Amino acid sequence: MSTTDDAPAPVAPAAPALLIADPAPLGLAAFALTTFLLSAVNAHWATSSTGSDWLGYAFAYGGLAQLLAGMWEFKNKNVFGSTAFSTYGAFWIGLGLWALLVAPHAVGTEASKDLGWILLAFAIFNTYMLIFSSQLNAAVFTVFLTLELTEIFLFIGNFAGNTTIVKVGGYLGVITALAAWYTSAAGVINGMKGRIVVPVGGPLFNM
Image 1 (tube, rainbow, N blue to C red):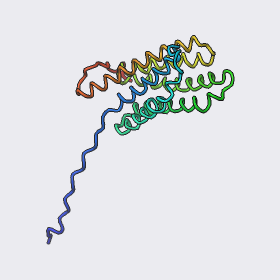
Image 2: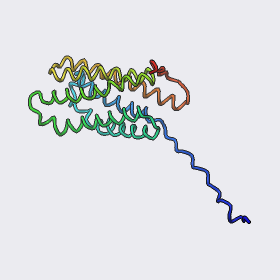
Image 3: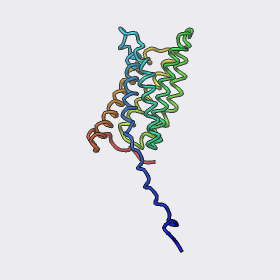
Image 4: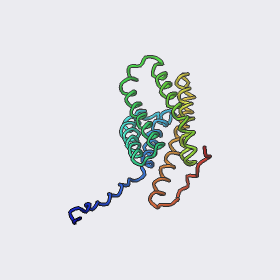
């Protein structure tokens, strides 16, 4: 004979999953600002400055903030965002460490050749991310397209020791930064309003 003691204990309802804000606008803004500062140097716009104003932000904003955005994208189960932001956050931290620890000891063209190899490696990574960004929206695709061109011009210019090509890469880097800032701004206001206020376009094609 069953009693109330034999009845199963009530099961507490599962706690709702914690939601986090979209970290992409932060990651894009961090990438944009640091890219802009370094690109202004490459474009020879910052001739009256130290030329190293980008360095601190390579660690604090382009590096750390972007890396954090990548980690939060893992929470959002966004494989593209987590890979992109984590990689380019690490890129800025690595570039900053190279500028502090390696570049001061380089002889002759060694520093330029170092940069050539670094940028070539990231251009390879960026190539498949560019292809996959076409599945997201036109704004993100534009960021990766202009970044691809920037990296190509910069690694060619650094390998060749050609300051004119590097300067063109600087101009392209500024355009990349502007595209990233636009996409970041769109993410902020669209997220605030819960609707499309600033357009980003749709996927370019489906695989």
